[in-house]
Image (cartoon, rainbow, N blue to C red; front, side, top):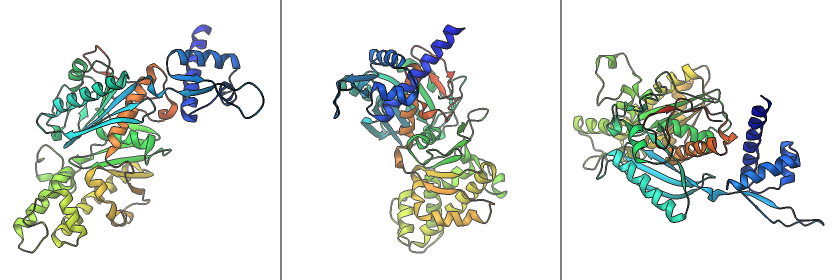
Length: 420
């Protein structure tokens, strides 16, 4: 089928040209031909199609040497926009971004405010769609990160206790309520995508992102691919059991042993238990005990708070040893509100695990702060657009196979193809 092969090669070359233009910021037709080894006529045809599609813009250039000025080609960031949402256990963060991934507008609000989590999610998307209309930009894709396991066949969110979702029809609901292509993915998986794109996992083939906050989860990247598992449940390390004694206790609040003890609510609960069972002075007495206040008191030298954090470090170290023994990652990225609060204790954590492993990975705190999931959602939404218009090689090594996606007018879930 020579004609089909020619069409496929033409499509690949369009992708390469668009990636080059986007990466360079500004270029010319001769530079494209020289860099990609294409003929001038091929570049001319491809550039013409991309201009017609609104993805690039060509304007008259200038030159400092004799001869006709070369026209300058730039990526058209204003050709459209995408929406990325991080629906967390306590906050909903959503962002509108142009097609380069630059954030144009952002919204933060409580997940459990006046509404339940799903109405909060829909309201955030609608508000950003209104902002896009004000800017005169079409919304081309939406991606949502949720703290739950997603069934890629039914579109159901399962095992999402922090948003009270168990068999919640997230994908069918979004298909009915949002009239553009939508991707739904586990929030920590999107955080890992963000780290592969713009964070601590760039050019790293084997890394693990562990998010410790209201809940606990992990995303595993092995040989440059996201490990999903048979039921999309890979990385659910909140279910790790940390001692034989704990096997005799049922799961509390529907969450696993590690999450019960080391998550934000678990840390606050442990501090409250110690306050009730001891009489010693503590900065936490008579105050609102939160995970943040426990970390602050520990940094101030409070003995009770220090004990809680020390126990938390033990729990986290046990989880890290299990992760490293199974996966041998190059880097472990600690994320989430509690994970990021462990920055002062990285050396203590490394010391706890180094004598238990034959090789110790580098431990680091997320350089993306609290934005990792929303950045990953933007990346996934951009990839959805580029699969249809101009897929980017930026994510060529990062397989999101198994994620749940809906398209306009669809009421059922479909497993998406790999990125790239």
